[in-house]
Length: 248
Ligand code: PEP
Image (cartoon, rainbow, N blue to C red; front, side, top):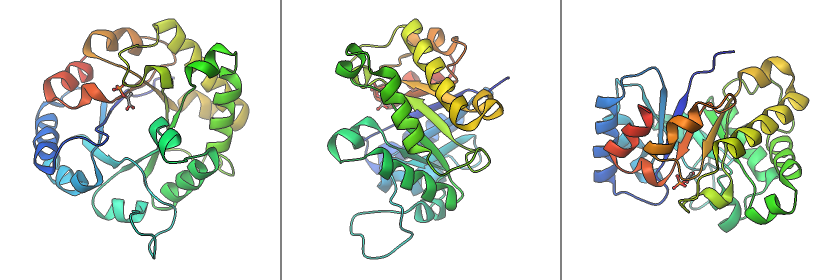
């Protein structure tokens, strides 16, 4: 089944509003191929980035969102507020959120459900640490993240889901997974999705690779059977470098 490639940029805690607007505007001008393009700015830059990319194929998302719609939750934002600002996506369960901010498979599931209730598209991040890989726990970790993150949801509910496989040891380290390691983990993840949600869903869900993707390794990774795009951190912060991945 043909799956449209998604190239997503996670800006993390980088770029001022002015810099984010300039980057979103530059990408909007350049994004000319048939790939879907998504950027995840800081929350401050979401609305202006949406304005800067208006009329283009560049979509904007938030890097995290809480599961309550509104109320006394200081410091949080909801998918509904993100949607009102023009966001289309919510990034959920990035390894930095899991590692530094106590995100669990259960809280990821609450965020996925809240994202879908608001009519936004969830991008659920999964991936193992080096220790988990080396101790033979890859299947167990990915299975827990996928089944936990997608609990209580049907294939119909999850029609807009994208999964991002990001081995923790490859994020921001410059150590990219080999094409074979990445393809094997993607095939494993797709198999877990198949067990959970059936053949039709597993064949159509997009699974992105993330972890030190650069213009010079993107084409090889995107050429793998089960890799349907990339979630890019460091290399998404400059228009010419990110465009090199978009056009790879
Ligand atoms: C990420 O933050 O999701 C990521 C993959 O970062 P990097 O591309 O810098 O490894």
